Image 1: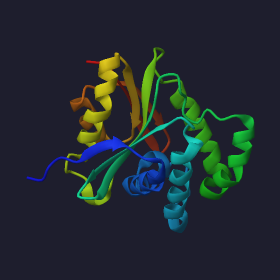
Image 2 (image 1 turned 90 degrees about the horizontal axis):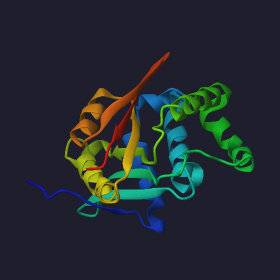
Image 3 (image 1 turned 90 degrees about the vertical axis):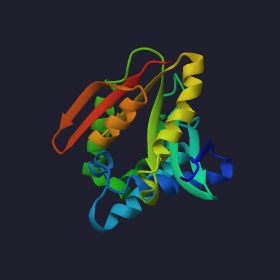
Image 4 (image 1 turned 180 degrees about the vertical axis):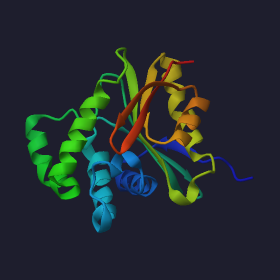
Length: 204
């Protein structure tokens, strides 16, 4: 049996590696399909979205993590510490990102994306919590325990500090994965074309 992957914070020069593995991992994820362009533009839209998300669009102070084995990047995650809100952008920043948003989503997709973000914000727990914004495993590495390795490593400091964790997911399979690591379903969102669960985890 191969050794479990190592999990560590991504270095500044590895931001592109995080973006690439998340683009691969979320190639057909319902939440992104809901608002990003589809068809021939789908792959490029995801690439451009994650390129910007890992830099500063999620939050300038986001935490980037990589899982690797044998020199190969297998998975990645984006966490926000308590008090940091995803996509909490200043009006100037929003204006600067508008051309990108139009190119990857179009007017209709932008409208759906903003409305979805507003609905999800209302489902966040009221107490202080860390937010797992994205966790993805490269397509070729799925089913090998990479996601579990990332969760174990990144949840450990939250347990040590007594911090609640929160996430959103669109797949029942991932609900089961997160439940194995102590998360429980705390909310559900159903909109035409999309079903989504929110999950919380109390520190252990």
